[in-house]
Length: 434
Picture 1: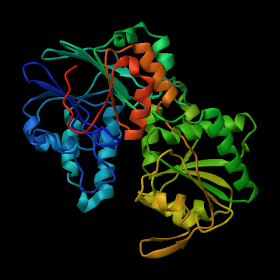
Picture 2: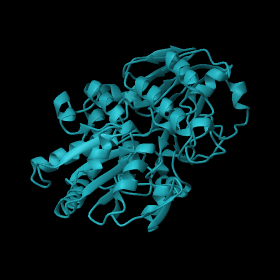
Picture 3: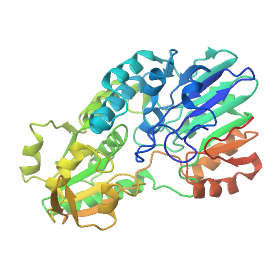
Picture 4: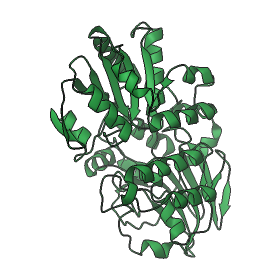
């Protein structure tokens, strides 16, 4: 475990008996300035590059891919394998990171483009032979193109990465995938399962209840002739929210005439959902395209000034993006409006955390903003909760489980439910023999 014992900076090195290795993910610790690469490992990270014969990327979130350009800077010359949708998403997410961080970015646009050249798309279930390893991707239903990684060698290792057990608006859920495919039987009785535990001590809200909550917020804003600003992640959550609102309109929960707009990186990545919709449960491109209207830098000023009730979806999950800050400054000062953070976890130290926890006068770009709009959280999660994690483990029956990607509390709570599978609570730099 080079990183990712707790949330952020995921990086897992798997070595064979001869010291040859494959790397699964190489992510950033996003909100810690002094940790732009995974924490120190027992061996200097740069020295590991000579061992690595292939890199496998599970999905395009920064905490899993944000450090990939370092590998090339350090001399890695092999392929970076991913699913087809992940490849363009990684490029856009990394380029956006360079743009947002500016001079603070540790790599350049050129580094990102070189990383993209090394990426090679593979299909789900396709076997990739690397030395003594055979590696395959299986859908994890977390975001578009996200994958679990099954590694077969002297031992079999399943790395779940982030996964969603239940159905969402865009995805079937791993539960349905497993029920519908005998190929997932390859997981059963694996020697080691490295499983995420983000919500190992929590139950997440169902999409049915999320829709009820969202409908109430939108209806209140419509009644007040106000606007609803929904700030969320850039890749899948905008699509989940847009389809949720469409469902609400069809069921009479939300006024049919309210327009839904999308802006920022979320708008640019929304095209990926449409292009690769065959990786989702939405097969008609029109279903996604008609759910939102795109906004650009020219029309966004008109949108916030037009006086008509509307919903605006913007990326910049923790008020960390240029676009989300623009809308927040325009919408937050008015009582008739509503600001919703569509997430289950807002890290301390972020502007969003301060706002959600009651701060009503904040400073942005040297100007004080008084917040009068209603501020709330829509607890939208694309991770499995405690129930899903336990059900998945009981179905696979691994000989041993390593719990990663979660707080100490969530891992310890989950371990109590999984005693039959010899659970191990991970720590940074842990070396483990399956």
